[in-house]
Image (tube, rainbow, N blue to C red; front, top):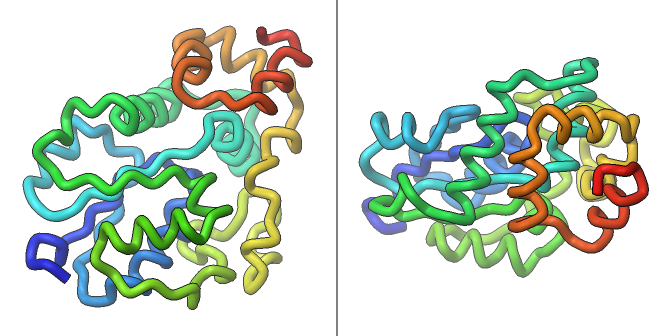
Length: 205
């Protein structure tokens, strides 16, 4: 591992799979100093961290919102957490604050489903790839929002890419009525055909 990659900072919004991804990265890069920055905006992060590698991680908006809301047992999320998701997702697609950092981008949904994607992330970190932690749940976050630690040892069997279908669809109507800029960003940068059909079916689009 190169000298400047002994420091790895993980910039991510809560409930975006950060513990699971972090455990994988630690297993690839055991010599690295690894620090998790959860719900820290890119601009605030840059005021604190000046060197090393940044793992900038985001997650599909609908799946993230389902996991966050379910974990909190609420019907809406605070403005702060929605702004956190937006800030990190915006930096992911349109770099502004991290231009002077070495950034490794991680889309959680792709990281979860694709071994090739994980191997590419590992290579960017100069790590040694393994799947030792692939099936291990993230103990630090209490496991899944939906099943807690029930799937420990079978993490790849969790339907994390379908979480948006497991909550009341009216949650998304409320979300996008309250934060129309989220829908505008999602449509432009992230939305796939399945999510588009889903949002049409519930009257959001």
